[in-house]
Length: 315
Image (tube, rainbow, N blue to C red):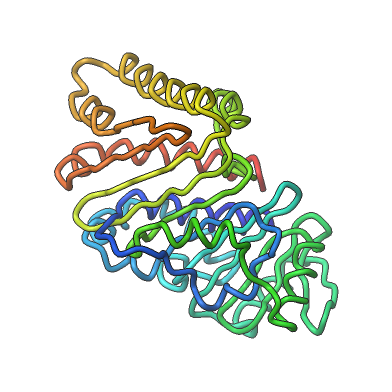
């Protein structure tokens, strides 16, 4: 079931590489997920694939998504992520993480695939769980499936029955601060939103050096003919914000220095990322025009290959 969790995460991230838009405040959490969110979640991340699929950039680059990997996922689970999935939500705290997926599929449609994989089956609260204690999958209702540990799914199914789930007030405040049209977003309290992310060891090490200085993060991307990204890091002190600011600027600078001088488009990409400090807050902004996305799109394949390797390790 870890395969399921990683693929929906990766697909959402990869689809996000072609998206951004305008700005009224208050991002929309898919209504199908709201009562299922663990109240103690410290990280929420969402991808509105229904909206992304309607953007010009997705229409242009959606075909570049890993066809073989997605075909394999379709054959294995009976879900075509390119066609059937409309929304993804990830929720995590220090101990557990959940992936929620809404789309055009039913339990009757997918269950035979899972049975054919000889997945262990248990019953909880009238629902069948497929998998083991660490990695399981359950159908909450037609069109909504959840993946995570058995314990996390038990809690989710309890919330589904009582309707007592929902995000915490601090996370709701962060969601309210995001532009309404952000198709891809993440909010966190208590540090960086890194739970379970398939990162390169050097990147994970670099981010761990600033994690202790970050109290929370609000980040999102909107999509039109370009990509418009904004992230706000709330830090524990002015000194901590300076450390985060310098680390982010240093990482971008290093990436620029190690880029071939002939790769003008990549240099332009790095130059489009702006990092500013304001007291205990660090702001990151990047606006990529459509022509720049066109020119650097070849590098998307390298990103996909990295994620693909990470998925293989996590199966």
